[in-house]
Length: 247
Image 1 (cartoon, helix red, strand yellow):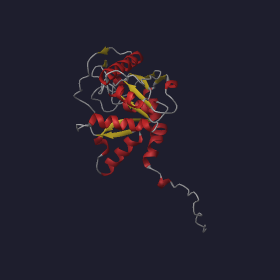
Image 2: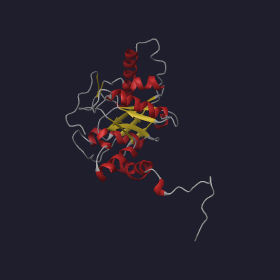
Image 3: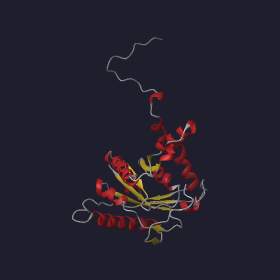
Image 4: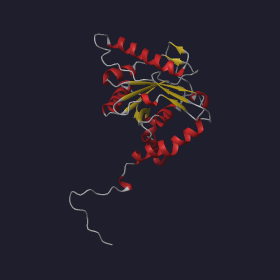
């Protein structure tokens, strides 16, 4: 049956093919595929979700025990969470490469090239842009996975981001992911994990009248103290060594 075209200025129905596939991937992964699968495989115990602000910019600062952490946090927390991903995940060729890039973007990953001299500044700028849009950005202050399950000294990027943007920092303690996915294991095995979320921390104005480096160190240490209180890990006052079998 012939139908007249819509009048000028009238809203045009949105066709499925017009939609950004990456916008479809996120709810699909979180609510249909990976989210339910994670709840079945890992039976996560989650506490403190009320501490995650419902709107506005938020920095999630969590300990880092396994590669699984980068997916557990976005899939379990109630808001869409962005995190940094290796540039290589987004530059693959062919159908597999495009599918991998779409998947990582769909679950909230943002590409960052860590090879250049501006890597740290570029990462900070990327995170600040997410927060400027009122989004949620997750970061592991240790900078790498713990090689032995202990909590290591935090790097100051999280503090610099908080002081630069004024966004609150919500500490998160992750428990058990190192048991279900030990270092070197690509596919996690079933087991129980836990996420404990602490109250937001406000660091606005902490660098006023204080050398920026000193303020960043103090703020980072406070964040790590909050994470330790949630995770129950032994603390090591030195930077974590880079594991030899990073994924």
